[in-house]
Amino acid sequence: MTSRQSIADALQRDASDPLAHFVDEFHLPKHRDGAPLTYLCGHSLGLQPKSAARWIEEELDSWAAGGVLAHHDARRPWIPYHRLLSEPLAALAGAGPGEVVAMNSLTVNLHLMLTSFFRPHGSRNRILIEASAFGSDRYAIVSQLALHGLNPHEHLIEIAPRPGERHLRTEDIIARIESESARLALVLLPGVQYLSGQFFQLRPIIAAARHAGALAGIDLAHAIGNTVLELHDWNADFAVWCSYKYLNAGPGATGGCFVHARHARSFDLPRLAGWWGHDAGTRFEMGPDFHPMPGAEGWQLSNPPIFSTAPLLASLELFERAGIARLRTKSIALTAYLESLLAVRLPQAIEIITPARADERGCQLSLRLLRTPSESKRIFAQLTAAGLVGDWREPDIIRLAPVPLYNTHADCFRAVEMLAGALDA
Ligand SMILES: Cc1ncc(COP(=O)(O)O)c(C=O)c1O
Image (cartoon, rainbow, N blue to C red; front, side, top):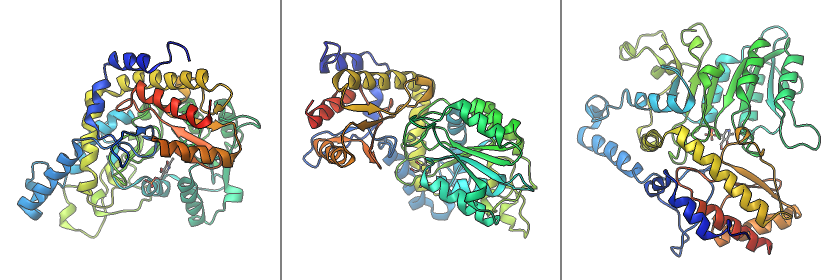
């Protein structure tokens, strides 16, 4: 261990971190005996903002005080409640006015988007995804193919890294888009890949998809609140996300959706309709015909679930105060610090499979222990018992994410010491 690798050095770095005070805004999980856990699992479930309870309680109070009247008269009226989230979410998504809406959960939003934006016609009837796509995304896509009488063997293109490589090369994705261009209807990729932590180079990929005459959709589950996004300028057709990871809104919280402004008035697009997507001015007239609102709001189905949306407002208020650009600057440094500790302390014991370049990853590092998968799994269980909260993904990957809003250099130092202890290094 070098002198740069000590808890004193880590604490020194935390002392000079201008965003360090944000950790006090969160509840930090503890062992049953009250000892603090080292929580590096924001890629799975973000921590609870202390203010979340107040935001929920205020809605409970509105309900108690007004019952149904709170739809119009509450401090934050419920009918337009989802609109409170539009600006802060647009800031994180890099979206313009009307392009985002908070609604549903990720897979539901993906189905809504696929219904409108996967429009196979003639031989242009294929979807390109990555071979390690998150299960739910693949299930959604295969079921949408089936709705069109198509099948994954023929109509789903799954692109994998080159043999012996861990990441998809941008040039390979683009080459595949070009070679499939006559048959491609849609490209659906993640912002940040859930397993490897790779942050895709979305601007050139989306440009290639559009140049090929296909549409481009993005799953931002691991990217929103983690990286700086410019969905409007990158020209994505749509994007979907959940809010329980880096957006810290709690399990199953209200997710979100981006629809590019060029589709805002595409009222002839087939879509699954519900009353909350209907023109807000005439919604309560309950006419027989559906008239969608322009923009992303026109894809809403139901009235917003207030109690699982309120914590998102609590969290977005923290993002507004911290600023995503400053968070990203800290995040790049914090992840590089974790990486350097791992490299010096455990050079022979682990492989980091996340790209080394800062612009090709978010905050997450995915590790493989250079042991057998069953030994690795046992070591991971030992780490969990020792108080390190990361997660295990089959077949042999440990994901750790230092989150700039609430993680510290000291957390990274402790995590690596625990890993070294478990590996006997
Ligand atoms: C990459 C990715 N896509 C989709 C989902 C599914 O999200 P939901 O359960 O909100 O539909 C997840 C959940 O963790 C995810 O990580």
